[in-house]
Structure formats: structure tokens, C-alpha cells
Image 1 (cartoon, one colour):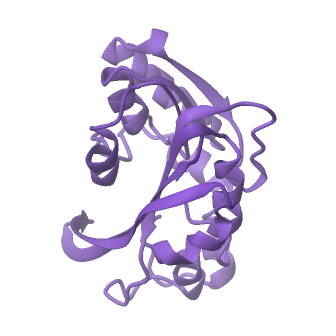
Image 2 (tube, one colour):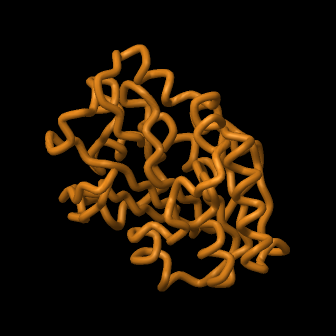
Length: 216
């Protein structure tokens, strides 16, 4: 989620939509570091590689890391420009044969019979608490015995420039439990401290981290 100063709630809401992200990905510079998200590394490093779906993959950093660990990965995002960047990065990393791409909005995502050993999403923040419904949709794509990992920004007052729309999109890990079907067992439900740097400013924050396993 982007930090923006002095914008209205309507302007903030527009930042959650595909055109804003397509515009963001039109520049020459990478938007993200290319490094895998830390909670992904923590939770997935010990799993046996299989098939994975990363929803909200952006420029593909997590997709590339998973492929390098031996996973066969589908990267999904609602931004065509983001997916094009991700595909270029995967080709540059030499793992294009282990990945494919899917343009889809997480808010309308439907598994439609697809299933994966791992479904993961990092820092998706649909407006107005919509991540509970997104979690429910993502859970449908997890194969029996597979894992769902959802990570996002915990509510914080340490970023005063965030609008009310941004704050309503943040969530605690426990908020997502109601989105898990009955055949899922929560394994991790916690806020984990992390230090991040935005626009030259270092901020202590927390990652809301939900890891759940679908029973066989």
C-alpha cells in the first residue's frame, strides 16, 4: 500500500484500483525491491515445494523466490503492467519455465476448479475490510493438505499521512479467521514486528500474518 499525503478519501480509494497500479508500473524504475517478503521466507522455507499461487504478485519478487525454491508458480495480479514487469523479471532470473501469469482482481477471484499446494498473498488491502472475503476466495484454491498464507499491514498510527480509507483496509491476523472455511486449521495468527523504510523514513510496523492448513 502506498503512502500518500494530503489526499481525500475518494482519491485514496482510487489508489486501490487497477488504473492506479498500471500507472505506477509504467515508469522505468522498479517499484519494489525484488526481494521476497520476509514472512513468506519464514513460513514457506520449510515446506515441500509443489504448486503455488501468489495473488497480488506485483513485479514478481515472491514468484521468483518460490520458483527458485522448486515451486511451480502462478503469479496473479490485476495490473497488466505489473504482470508484464513480473514476466520480464522472471525471464531475467532464468525461471520463466517454472511460472505462468494470471490477470485477475482478488476481489472477484474464483478458483473455478484450480487448486494449489500453497496460496499466498502479501499486502493486499481491498477497501473497507474486504480482505476477509478475499481470504475466503483464496482458501477455495488451496488443495487438501495445502497451505494458505495471508500477510498484511496491521493497523498503525505511526504513519499519520494515511487516510481513513487506508486505515480501514488494514487488518489484524485474527480478523481473517472468519474467512477460513471449516476444513482449515490455523497454524499462525499473529502480528509480527518489522522495520520498513518508506521515502527515506524508517518506521517500526507489524505484519498481520495468517498461516492455515487445509485438512486432508
